[in-house]
Structures are given as C-alpha cells and as structure tokens.
Length: 448
Ligand SMILES: Cc1cc2nc3c(=O)[nH]c(=O)nc-3n(C[C@H](O)[C@H](O)[C@H](O)COP(=O)(O)OP(=O)(O)OC[C@H]3O[C@@H](n4cnc5c(N)ncnc54)[C@H](O)[C@@H]3O)c2cc1C
Image 1: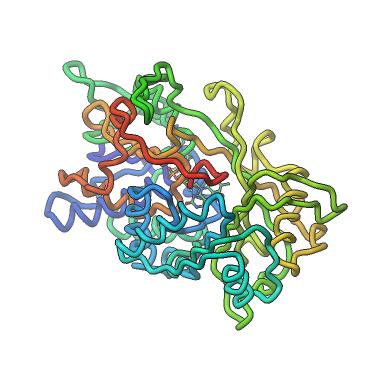
Image 2 (image 1 turned 180 degrees about the horizontal axis):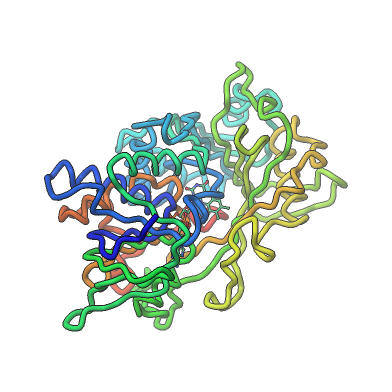
C-alpha cells in the first residue's frame, strides 16, 4: 500500500486496541457526520496480530476484584457478543475456583456482578464447591477449594481470527491498514506540544490525532513522546512514593497439552467454561510425586481447537531487568528469551492433573515443539492507562489486561469525537499522583 502523506487519525498498532478503535471510530465518525473510515490510517511494523493480541490465550471474563475493571469488562463482553462470528468468540462462560484466602473477595465480585446485571452463580463451602464441580466434571479433584464463581457470560475467542474479523470490519468502513511500516518518532508542533506528524521508516505522515495501541512496546512510544520514565505514586496510606518506574515487564507463561480438545467436555457432552483455579493446596508433580509448591498457585485452561488441545497458562513471572534493556523483539514465540521452558511444562501439567483425573499422566502429550509465552508491559499499579497526552495523542496502555477488552476501542472512539467516557475515567494517568489507585486482590496473578 502507498503510504498517504497525511491522515486525520493515525492509529499505531494493529492489535485488538488499534483495530477496535479504528473500526468503532469509523462507525462513530459516519454516524455523527464528522467523517468516515477514510480519515483513519492504522500503521503496524509487523502484520495484523503480530503483537500480544495475536498470541493471547483469548480468555474473556468479567472476574475482577476492581469495580472499575468489572464494569469495563462487562461493556467489552457486550461487544464480543455483538458479533460472535466475526470475532470468533465462544461464549462458554468462565469459572473462578478459589481457595479460602480468596473466598471473601470473590464473594464481593459476585455481589457486584449482581448489581451490574452480569449473570453469575456463586457456590460457597468446600462440600458444595466439590459437588458443583463434580456436576460438571465427574473427575474433578482439585483440593483446597471453598468457593466457585461461575460466570455465565464470557468465554474465549480465537486470537488471530478475531483480529482479522475486526480488521475486515474496519476496512469495510474505509479504514486503511498499512503493515510493515515502523514508527520511529514524532514531529511536534512549534507552538504546542501536540504531534503534527508520525515519522516512519517510509516517510513522515502528517496527522491531526494519534492513537497509540502498541501493546508491550508502549514504553518505546512513551519515550518517543518524551513522557516521564519515573513517576510519583501516592499509596493507599497517603504516602507519596517518588521515582517509581512507569513501566515493567512480566512474562506470560502459556502452553498447550496436545490431546483431543473433546476429552475436556462436561458430563453432559458440552464444551466447558474456561476454568481458572487458585489454590494453596500443596501441588505435587504428576511425574514423580515430589512437592512443587505449597504456596498459593493458579492456572487456567480451556479446550481449544484453534490451538489443537487443552490450552492455558499459570502465573506469570516478573522480568527482573531494566525495562529499557528487555529484548522485546523478536516477540512472542520467536523470542529466544521469553518463551516457556521445562519448569512451566512440568508445573502446568501437574496443575492440570491436580484438578482433573483425566489429565493425569498426560505430560508427554504437551506440545513441546510449539514455542509459547510472551511479554506484557505493566503500569505501576498493574492496571491500564487510557488517556490523552501532548494534546492529541491517545495512549491505550492496557497493562496486559487487554485482549478481552475489545470494547475499549469503542469507548476511546467516543472520546476521540468529543464525548467523555465514564467507564474510562478511573484509568487516567493522573490517578497515580492523586492516589486514586485500584484495590488489589489476594490472587496470585498481577491482573486480577
Ligand atoms: C502470552 C499472552 C497471553 C495473553 N492472554 C490473554 C487472554 O487470554 N486474555 C486477555 O484479555 N489478555 C491476554 N493477554 C494480554 C493481551 O494479549 C494484551 O493486553 C493485548 O493483546 C494488547 O493489545 P494491544 O492492541 O495493545 O497490543 P498488541 O496486540 O501487542 O499490538 C501492538 C502492535 O503494535 C505494533 N507496533 C509496536 N511497535 C511499533 C512501531 N514502532 N511501529 C509500528 N507498529 C508497532 C506491533 O507490531 C503490534 O502488532 C495475553 C498476553 C500474552 C503475552
């Protein structure tokens, strides 16, 4: 594609956020008579889905301890449900199955889901939890479980297929998508800090508004926009913490057990909800019976024909390096550094066997040859930042929560045409200095 010399809206990144913003912006420009998809150019240095969105496990859930996250997720689930075919969305539901340490907090999630009309069921107590799970899977055997939150909505979507679905919808509205074009920097106005042009390896594109949906590469754009590498964060006790690094990386660990996905159907022959278990029951090796951990651990999994087996993951690990020195490229399965290894495979397969007898002795079926895992870039409180910087640059930094957040692009589009979104308000950058942080949960995952 020939790159235009100018565009009204330059959207950087053809992942879930860039594409969703472009598509919904095209619709909203048309609906308000303010323009059309022809005013929007999406730019990606790779291809559609060559970042985190293209390797995401694809889980879509509401289960968040933070009220603002839950409301936002409910809005996203509506967008997934609006066109399941194009988005390759499987509304099988989602289950948060927890140990006592999380019981009370998950109970509050259930209460608040009722308030926002998000359908779910909450089962409490060890015996009732076991009975409920056995009603779904007769080989259920996870220990230490005292509550089950069963979300009837949500489920998962097929990562690349959904992105192509979204790209197709955007292009049908006249949006242009330029792949293989790398953004190298920005031109700024002489009388203001606003961006006037996007500098790429194929020339500079003049623009009026920029949207950055760069996933794990967000810190590179933060630098290009000359935003602060370290910030002040007011803690819950009112103490100000200065020089807190704005970005950090965690490595997501996921993989696939190469068995027939049908082996994980429910007792009545249906495709099961996505399963997420957090427990402090000791975890023993499914290979030699040795103790792997007696601390809180968690896993998630689903049968997935796209991945060709039972696909899922476990808690990520923090990348203990200067974020600027972390090798982001090549990304995902192509990375020599940030892919899962034998430890993950052994642990995750043992976790599966801990939960369901049908997975015992199946580690040899793990897809060793398929590399998996990838980096996520997180904010100081591990929650997203959706905000405008330098007057005309909208940054969508989802802190790795975001494949499921397909609806954020719709809200960002609304803000771009001048209408503030109440749902995005709790995710402004200013919350760090004001101490308006989101509550943290007891989950072993940084994103719950
Ligand atoms: C292994 C893994 C599993 C995950 N599983 C889930 C899940 O199940 N559910 C969930 O909700 N979330 C999940 N996530 C998180 C989710 O994938 C991300 O939060 C989300 O996809 C980020 O979307 P994005 O559009 O911001 O970025 P991305 O999808 O990363 O897209 C950013 C794009 O920007 C492009 N880009 C970068 N730099 C430049 C440049 N200089 N010039 C031009 N283009 C550039 C990249 O090529 C890329 O295509 C997972 C993440 C990982 C790593």
